Length: 214
Image (cartoon, rainbow, N blue to C red):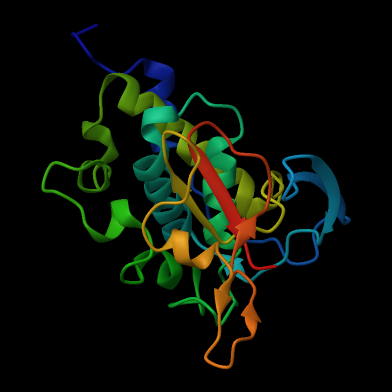
């Protein structure tokens, strides 16, 4: 096997069988997922079973690329790829987010996912446009991203975020960029207290924090 070549089973996972169109509407029963409270304790919240429009192979490939691009450096962290994909899917149909009419619209919307919207010429987003060129751990991570995308869009993998629609990564778990404002209470012009727009939806996964609207 040439140096850095992807193992045969990884190549098979990348090419995969035809995905086709599947629907997750009305799949399963509600489930209880633990999330972190403001005090750092875990509490149970009930989230709806997966529901959404029919998804296509193009949706699957784009979701896999997004998950791979955002999380490849921590791809072996349990539950991370599932959470990244869930956060994107949870935006579909939510008018709060750009491109909410479709999964492709959500992922391609400007200034939403950093790795997708500001890719360098040799970025993971650009490289994954032709996944057969990926080698080594990148090939393994992308194969894993495809498996997760399949599971999420078919309803076989449940949302493990507690309904998150946003996420960020940091070394210490502290908010970065615009999330500092979104996760903090504000004082309105009339002196009223305006609660945070986003709060943690679950315990952090590796360096990633997942957020939902209160």
